[in-house]
Image 1 (cartoon, rainbow, N blue to C red):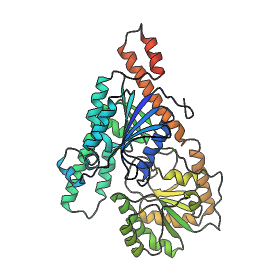
Image 2 (spheres, rainbow, N blue to C red; image 1 turned 60 degrees about the vertical axis):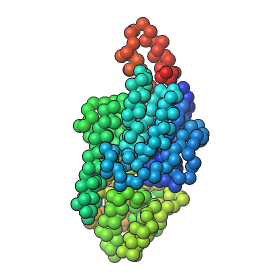
Image 3 (cartoon, rainbow, N blue to C red; image 1 turned 90 degrees about the vertical axis):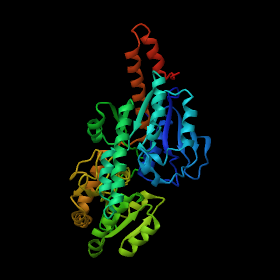
Image 4 (tube, rainbow, N blue to C red; image 1 turned 45 degrees about the vertical axis):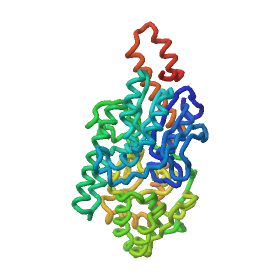
Length: 431
């Protein structure tokens, strides 16, 4: 039952933050979009989301999925301080969203997928739905272990006022409390990074866990040779919207720009950067190239010798790394930044403990084309065939199906069990 035909009798409601198509962007948006695109080929899929500002609110169908969009939230995020919800949840917890969910939950579904902690404001509603549906299943699609990730991110916000730091600590505590409630309530927790299971279990205990690695639907370069003619360029890929990502970019460029320029190595920042922040960085580091959003990323990456991952905080799996890997751009990163992928440091990528050491590593690597080619070939071979979005939806559906089988088996006497299991195997909906 993997990637190829539709298990249309399994009815799934997917609850997510926003319609995940441009003008919204970013790794988390790409991950949600990829899971949705894969699920719609594996089940009968309905998606609830807020408008992205371009697609109007209301009902519509697109490529095999039904969408129910509600208006964008206009709630001032600062007011979340007065709520029991963290900022990212409170902003999305509108009356229109909850009304849309209540409307949908009156329809028959076999399962509800809760996508990202930002959607957890609906937990009371979907928990009541599951309690009323003996065969219903709740699955939480995590993007990272939020308690740990946000503690690290907020600690990186240097220069903030004491009041702001206190507010961030409170917000992080709220995130952790809600994350624990979600993990304890749902039937299945989907991990983007299998290494994070222990973090969830430490607070939520034993659950049913599955891993949903991000897929990759971009170009896959069959072969590449980095030569002396390849530009002496290092690429940094990824949007820089959130504060912690802007801080990482600022700190990285402060560390690397001058030494790289002196060594004749160009630093290329690819992806959307807030205009005022970009202008400030360009003034500070005139030798750095800011390419912004590029239409043909694979072609653009062929003009670089190395991709850098200077992230000092963040969990989950960095979705952008698959673009490096399948465009055959070797990688170097901060120790621990390249995680959740089937890669080994030293063999498949290079790493260094801090930005200063990473800068020197990048300068050394771009002059060693033999090692660069070994790294890109090894990373491609380790990941080839393991990042196919088409299998992800089928894997999620199968996990839901297995949970339903187990619930039925535990609740029913042996005599009618075979008939009920056969019905569940066909995806019969919860009444």
